[in-house]
Amino acid sequence: MTPEDASKFIAYVLRHAPESIGLRLDMQGWASIDALVTGAVGGGRDLTVADVVRAADSGVKKRYELSIDGQRIRALQGHSTLQVSRSFEAAVPPALLFHGTATRFLDAIREQGLLPGSRQHVHLSADEATAVQVGQRHGRAHVLEVDAGRMHALGHAFHRAENGVWLTGAVPPEFLSG
Image (cartoon, rainbow, N blue to C red; front, side, top):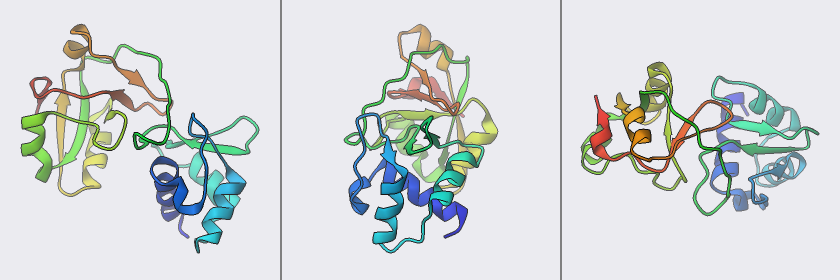
C-alpha cells in the first residue's frame, strides 16, 4: 500500500467507518494502532504499524494524532456525526478564512451556504493555497472567501483543530464571496 493509499484508508476508517474493519473508537475518536492494523489485514489490506505511524507523522495536513504512548491514533477532525464527540475550545478566527470546493457545488453553496454535510463541522483554511488543494480533490477548484471576522462578531463560534484547520457549524451565504 502506498503512503497516500494508507493515509486515505486510515482517514476513511477513523473518520467514517471503523466498523468496516471491526474497529471500535472511544468517545474522543482514539483507536488502538494494533487493532487498526489487525482489522485492516483481516480485511485484505496490506497495512503495518509503520504505515500508520508514517501517516500520522507525514503530510502538511496533519490529519492524525498519536497518543503520548504511541499506542493509539485518532483523526483530528472530519468525523461523521455519529462516530465521535470531540470538543474544541472556541477561538477568534482571522478576518478572512477560505473554503476550497469544486465548481460543480457553487450553485448549491451560494443558495444554502456551507453546511457540514455528514461531518460535524465546516472545514476552513487560513490560507488560499490550502483551500485550492482541498477544492481540487473534488474537481475543478474554486476558492470561497469567508468573512469569519463578521461571523464571529455576530456570535458564530469558531474552533481551531490541532492541525490548523478552522471549524465552524455552518457558513450562511451572506458571509461568502468569491
